[in-house]
Image (cartoon, rainbow, N blue to C red; front, top):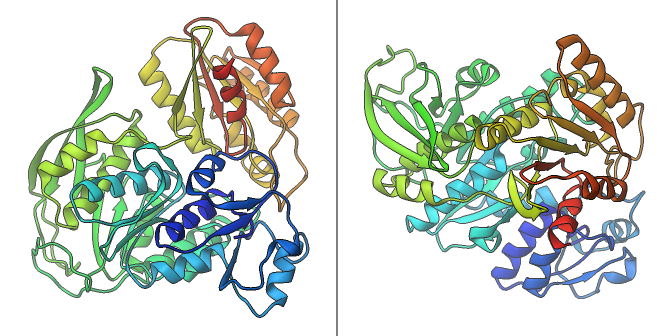
Length: 482
């Protein structure tokens, strides 16, 4: 596995290892959050790329698309050999397409919903296979390997990896323009999801059936709070569609949301069954499903929980079990994860790297920590995203008391390009002046300098948020250790 330390590659490595395959891999010698999982699995990792890493007696080579024949000699050697060689997405699809594949897709929330649904199904004894693009503490890794035909995956739209997958069921969280380095327009981005949901199997007309799903039935769980999803689903999807939201139009609606005793509480009502022939009149009568509670904060996690509730009901799990296991779930790494404390300050790691995600995470933190000082250390991820969404980024940190911007974290595909972190800092200052927002804003280029600054400035009860898809979490790890 070339590029084995990537979260998706590690997820797949754990699955293969659990199935009894011998797995080896290679990557750079930089520390990744996946290192711990790979060590625990006993997987040998070469921490330098070399064509000599590839044994001649292996059956399959899988490589991350961060690498290609131009920038990686192992990939070049693999593709020139007679050994079967697949990209990460192609390998995952070969497994997924042989099972009752449930794909979690959308711009935001995929990791949380995948892990959450997997947790509920696992404890409800459905014995699913689950692959998550992050470490899940309650899984002791990123993968669960069960004996059933169910496979739940976090399916990534980047580079149109979705074209390889043939889903039986899909949860579509949201559609919010991203990955401008690959999708040049919003329309291009939306089309990937349109084409994907077209592939869900058609179940025909089913008047009022509430029976559990079988392997011959397909369904789409769609977030109807998202205007783009509202627009594309009925036109592009012929399967059963079940909608959810925090609005009255959906089939499942969350309401009476409140925060107390360190948790979120809400009620759910369900629209009574109607004929799945969408020319039939809509039923506007609802059935009350009662009270739910979750440990995760933020309205976005109410939405994530609804997606899990709907899919679990559709898969035949009893409501009592859903409520119990939904409330037990503790989240994944890098999603508002508390790393520990430093000098009485709370240190939090968060993967948010898109303006919409930043707003959602900061709303959740303000909900949880009230008027405490929130300091955000933001590590912009990729030059193209920073450049295209610069104005949106400048409006996304309003809730924070202080914002520190690090140098942009590029990628193996993108080392530079037309924008800098200083551009973002200047845009933030201009935006704050126009909106009359008082906020400290600093540009600190490196992780080391930022850590030094924080050590001298952090005060008791501050909330320090390390935010971004790069390696900004290392600052938090160092602070908590020392």
